[in-house]
Length: 424
Image (cartoon, rainbow, N blue to C red):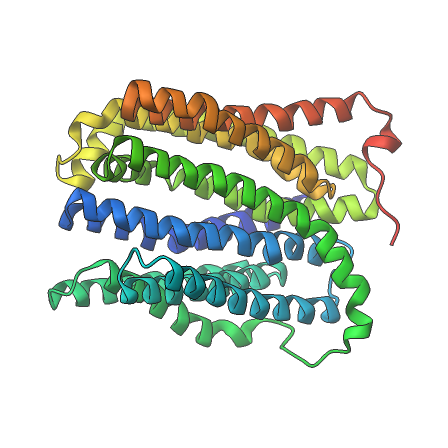
C-alpha cells in the first residue's frame, strides 16, 4: 500500500512537472517559430545569438543556485529554513552579478542595439527568478501549483506577443519584453505560495551550509561553463563558418526537437530529489529500484519519440513553418537522434547528481566539448548544415558514454564504496 502511494505521488509529480516545464518552454518555442516566420533569416539568426546569451545565463544560474538547491534541500538540508533563506540570497547575488556583467560587456563591445540588450537582461533575470520559485514549489510538494504558475505565464506571454503583433511592433526587443513581463507578473502572484518566506539570517550560522552548497555547486558551475562554451561556441561556428542565414535554419529546425528536453528535465526534477533522499538515508535498495525504473522508462520514451519524429517530422515542419523549411526533413531526423541520445544518457546524469558526484558530469561535458571543437568543427566545415546536425548527435553520444562508464565502474565496486552516504 505504501509503495503504491509513493508510485502514485511520483507519477503525479512527474506529470505536474512535465506540464510546468511544457508551459515554461512553450514561449521560447512559440517565439522562435513566430520570429522565424516574420523576420528575415539573418535577423532571426541574431535573435538566436541573443537568446543563446540568455541560455548561458540560465545555465550559470542553474550552476550557482538551482542544482545544489534541488539536491541539498531534498537530502541533507530537507526542511532547513536557514539553508532555504541562504539560497534566496544567492539568487539576489546572481541577479546583481548578471546585471554588472551584461552592462560591462555592452559598454566594451556595442554590437547590438541598447534596447535589445536591455530587454534581453530584463527577460533573463525574470525567467531565472520565476524558475527558482517554481523549483521551490516543487521541493515543497506543490508541483501542481508550479504547473498552474507556468500555465498562467504562458497565457500572459501569448497575449503580450499577440498585442505586439496587432500593433505591428513585432521585433526581437518586444519579444524579450513579453518574456520578462509574463514571468514578472506570475512571480508576484505565486511568490507567497512558498512555505518558507524570506527572513533575516545570522550568517555565522550559515557558513557550513554555504560551504556545502559551494562544494556541490562548483562542479555544476564548471560543467555549465564547459557545456555552454561548447554549445554556444558551436552556434558561433555555424554562424561564422556558414552564415547567419544558415544559423537561422539550424535554429528553426532545432526548435522542433526542443520539447524533447522536457522529458529529460521532467524526469530529473522528479527523480533527483527522491534519489537524493534515498542516498542521504543510505537506502541502497530503494535507490537502485527507482533508478532502474527511470532507466527503463527513458529507453521506452526515447524510441517512442523518435518513431513519431521519423514518421511525422516532415508534416510537422510544413505545418509549423508553412512549408518554409520543407527541404530540411533529413536534418530534423538527424537532430532528433541527438535528442534521443540525451534522453538515454539522462538517467546516468541524474545518478551522478543524486550521489553527490557532480564532478563526473563535468568530466562528461569536457569530453563532449572536445568532441564539439574537433569532430564537430570538421564536419560543419565539410558537410555544412547536415554536418552541424551530426555534430550535435556525436557530442551527446560522447556525453552519455562517459557517464555510462562511471556507472559501470560503480557496479563492479564493493557496495560500501559505490553507495556510502556522507555523514552529516
